[in-house]
Image (cartoon, rainbow, N blue to C red):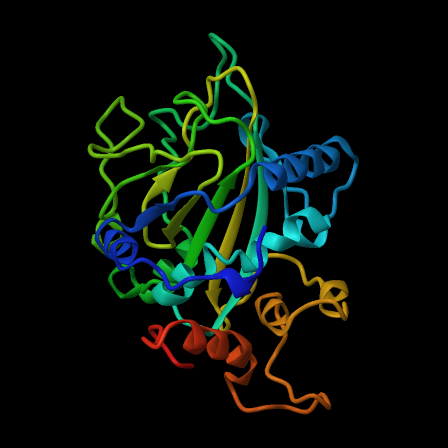
Length: 289
């Protein structure tokens, strides 16, 4: 993984595609070497007996939340220079990392039964559903974007996350026909082994069906505004590292503080990313806060 010094301004065509569809695939943003190292680290964690941050659910799904604090192999994703410019352009510089989620989904055996992704429980949803409950569906803005990286080999039957293009601007719920598990128009994005798949809290999505015969292994990095509560458990041991850059400290949750620890003005904690963005791209992000 390269450093932020190598970053380029986001492609306007990529931003336009995202605004239209509510998702986009960024090509070639991770190396094969990093992908192999991260996959090995992920399997070591999954093979262990750690329960802190463990995220298990139906049909054999396993994983962890807060993965960047569990193994240094995942730390470079926090400031991925081929992804961060697009995130800032679509949100603002006032960001932090809300969640880093490792997801392991085994393959469905031939003839196997499942409890999710069935007509009775199709699994299509929007993230941050509590915002819709509290604010009303029509008032929920773009608040967070996930960048999904797939660490396992991807084939058409691997079950990559599906999306409904354009659903981020549709206030109504998705309509799944009786007996089906997907709404009309749903697609599986064309994601390659070195790509990142970006989608937001308002985009309707669902996990695909993995029938490849191999587990699907992914990392979901969710970035949102700094005034949103993080999803992961606090990781103060990361912020204590002297080797971190100021931008890493911001994204990992440093609050609005002066160097002496006293309270700084609201939003000052976003200064590192704001200064970097203004140097990278004269066109300001969506918010200067």
